[in-house]
Length: 363
Image (cartoon, rainbow, N blue to C red; front, side, top):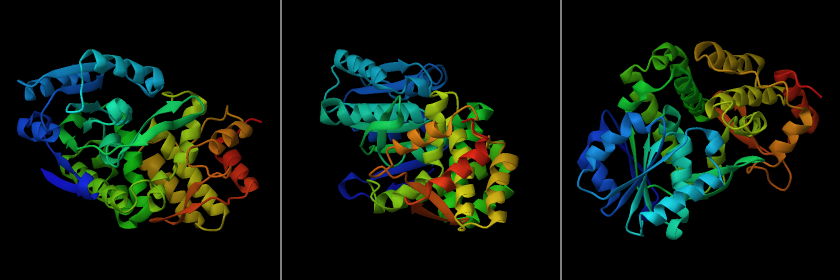
């Protein structure tokens, strides 16, 4: 087991990475800190791992809440269902929530923890690659609004992240690829050597070779922990983690949440960000082409956005994205592979060119 630390003073917490950690009773009980526990999961993960966690916590009072799977259920109505069950179970301030699932479960459980009784303890037990390398770390929690992803939420740090590598073996191949999009993102924003390493080891990553996987997860978590420690509430450099997300969130919202997996939309978004960077004269053509090649050819990710969304609709959704400021769309773009920058003064004609060229938009 590797243990990293997110250094936030009195709110610091560990990230544990290793095999079969969900069966480690001492580790999980220590993370919970005693009291009643409520496990929040979904109807796909529950048949696979819920009994394992319940056995690990045998002897403790535990409530289980099983939600329907999918991004389309990440909204306020689902949050109300959670509140009803927490009330019925008499979950108090000394209780803890456990997010057992992917990014959707992690986000919605974290937001429930942030808002139930004005804040209770919670533990992240991510079961997808995407959640292990990104969404489980950093304390961003929330739910979607029909007009924007994660528009309703709060910063609320977990007490612990337990990344069990063993659970990734049951992931569908599509989910593995989607998670790898977020892994590639870390190389693009600040680590060109890691990007090259991923390109060389793409085949092994896709088949979940244990040593490669552990190395990639640890590097991503270490990078995110460092960024979060320096900029917890995204007032500066943490925004770099949103590479591809302004485009990607628009794709998710316009297509209907769940049609595109988050990592798939981010992959297409990163290709669009690279294209826009090239049009601005910041990124050379060969580098922009390599971004697309690695994502599309090496990792098998979709990189062509839907063409049935109008240019005006893309503009509307990106303008209402939570990262927009004073009506200006905020992008994370590339000066080079491994060197991301924040830009909020992109000329609309250049943006329109990228959208039209990449998606073949209807008008």
